[in-house]
Image (cartoon, rainbow, N blue to C red; front, side, top):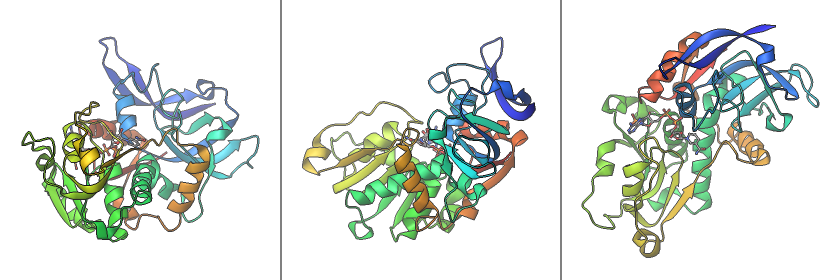
Length: 326
Ligand SMILES: NC(=O)c1ccc[n+]([C@@H]2O[C@H](COP(=O)([O-])OP(=O)(O)OC[C@H]3O[C@@H](n4cnc5c(N)ncnc54)[C@H](OP(=O)(O)O)[C@@H]3O)[C@@H](O)[C@H]2O)c1
């Protein structure tokens, strides 16, 4: 049986292309759970995979998509037709992913659709929103609250950033959205941002080991110089979550902010988050932590529009969450 899917392939000159294709079910690996995918979404990791990043995907041709939401076709434990989501683990990395009508995955990766969310809304949140939720939870578990001071979100127009802006604003934080795109100021303010700041301001460096203590908390998504300067610009007992490395994987900082200001730097990992924790967080995402601005965050596209959207994403030109109707 054949099905529609995106396929990323290597060209003879070493470049990569991603097209809508027909695949045979035999393309899928021999796992115990077959899912008919109805919705997926785009995440930065998909953009890397679709552009041939071998740190994400070792072998091509490959069906990308780290997120999938759909219905059970075959399962050792769940009834046919049960609505489920699969987010992270190896999906879309070296296991054919959610940007196709079918996926076959180990049952241990499957989460029944959380109450309070449709399959479409689950993909509106997706890995990026799940990551934003983890960032906010970990900030608060480490003592952040709205009375502590201003919070900054970097890469604010992106998937993780925009959901984080919405979640933090809904909780009463004064959120500064750091972005390279001033034209998105109104949209970010509609999500609850108090102010938009130019992303380049955060990378200004006067050469001192610590800068003026400005932020109580930070959801940092781009890495590189931005993360470096944030470590040096947090208030006493400031807390940063770090999840991305779009502008660099190295962190060049020093111990002064840690030992003089008690800085906390928290790493966030979503793909390999243990399944029990994933289920718990998704449950909260369908309830008290459901993003208030979910409709405004989602841009719906078709599978055939996804290759162009992935190119835009790798160039930092998408906004919010791209959800894909399969
Ligand atoms: N650790 C984890 O478990 C985990 C999970 C999910 C995502 N991530 C990582 O988090 C990061 C964000 O993911 P995402 O899905 O939110 O991606 P996204 O939707 O593509 O958003 C990334 C944002 O970063 C900014 N940006 C892009 N290119 C840039 C550049 N060259 N220089 C400076 N800023 C740039 C842009 O925001 P502005 O235009 O507003 O500046 C863009 O909207 C990625 O590195 C991703 O791999 C990690």
